[in-house]
Image (cartoon, protein in one colour):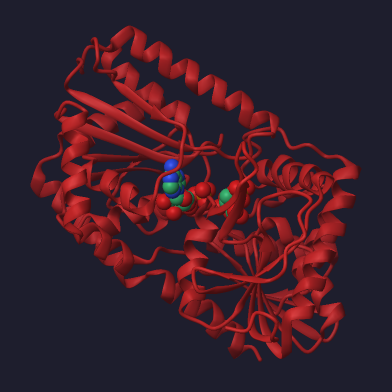
Length: 465
Ligand code: ADP
Ligand code: G6P
């Protein structure tokens, strides 16, 4: 693969699929970047020739284009100040909470916005440099919402798509954003703007009408001499890869081992998330702990394994969340565990795909209770892995995945009492009921996998040509 040649297909995302990490003695190495965006885009890119423009996760480093996991990667440099203002600041302290129902208070600061604009321009230039004449460029997610317009100015010959992986807020919330018009114009630089849900696409069209005074019709927004289409494309997982992994005898053996190590509890409950306040980790742990307080469970009946990948650790809200969860786990274990048998096993770390699938196979109840989530791939990964039709999924109504996985045990995570009862129900459902629910959910996930998602988006992008 020649990483210096121009590409017909370019993905632009804040993150590259690998992160450069330097350990204590100064040795640098690469590790898979966290989050659902990377999980979804890697298989899509592995099956297509193309270049991936993004940041490699470390500040103040200029890197040449390189190859990893069979992909051609074009690093974009971020200074320590860019990381602070653009990534931690405007992306993750302003947009992230605003787009997730204002669960945390968004920070509105002009200095953050200025750097967001500047860094978006840098990504647009990097994409313009690598794209061949008439190429397709697919811009990803909330960190890069100005890139479509900036890129169109630089390269009107390109076909530009944009996909938002997170929710897009209703007018009443989006209205707060002092730069709301700039963001809308930024997105309208694309030919096709994709969202996870129909509601999100409608929110966007309505906002263009209300704040930009543009003419809209159905899914379409007219701007100058162009028509921009806004539609929904629910993202998914690489079901075949997961099914193959879940079939691996080593993985199955490891799943057994995990259960044994945990004392073969009657029920093993599992949570797997980035450590993020949108994920509802505290609410689910509280619901679980209350089952012990109510004496519906006793030590040995059930164990909760919560795996939480470190995330955005320099953003204030994330630091507070980590402390709160650690305190909550310590308290619950102190009150309800027996010697050597904690009721909650909390791991602040990330795992390999193999280990993750072993955990999915070991778990009787997968607990996915975000307060708001664009999709939530963990829910779909669990379902894809359970070809044995065992296991139950407890799923928040506020996860995008709930629109497709109707047969999950659905909960409102804000309702702790309701969540605890539903958790109990999921733990005690008959094997036949679990199998019925799982069979229907698996059909959906296997038929609508990540390849179909990418194909539908890219076909729609080509169609409008
Ligand atoms: P988000 O994108 O908000 O992090 P998703 O559930 O959509 O949420 O995607 C998370 C992705 O990260 C999934 O592919 C999941 O398997 C992976 N992941 C989450 N936690 C871990 C972990 N502790 N170790 C390894 N991978 C993880
Ligand atoms: C979510 C976002 C992604 C982001 C990921 C991990 O999935 O939609 O854009 O990459 O979280 O977050 P991070 O801040 O570590 O990139």
